[in-house]
Amino acid sequence: MIYQKIFTTEQKIKSDLKKVIRRLVALNSIKKILSQIDNSVEIVTLTSPDKLKSLLSDLKGDDLSEYEKKVLNEIIET
Image (cartoon, rainbow, N blue to C red; front, side):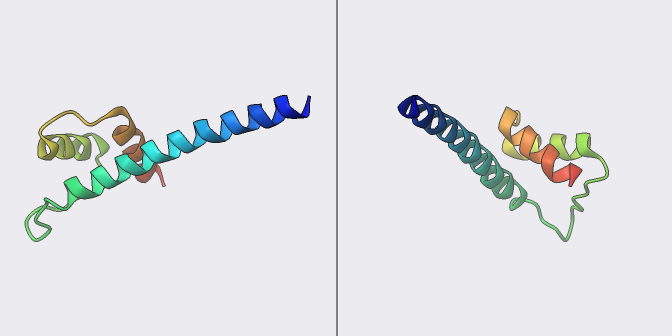
């Protein structure tokens, strides 16, 4: 019984860790994309999430990943 609970807890922790790592990778990707912006020319604002996502997607040269979108939504909402 105790071993089953330990195993279940271990699996949950591993799953949570994978999610956290994906979020960190996405956050680093967003930071890298944002570093391409010349802040003296472009003003990055959180008031228009769709424009921000479009800007980041354009700079990336590809669609944002699902995790990048999720992390970006977290940033916008906080």
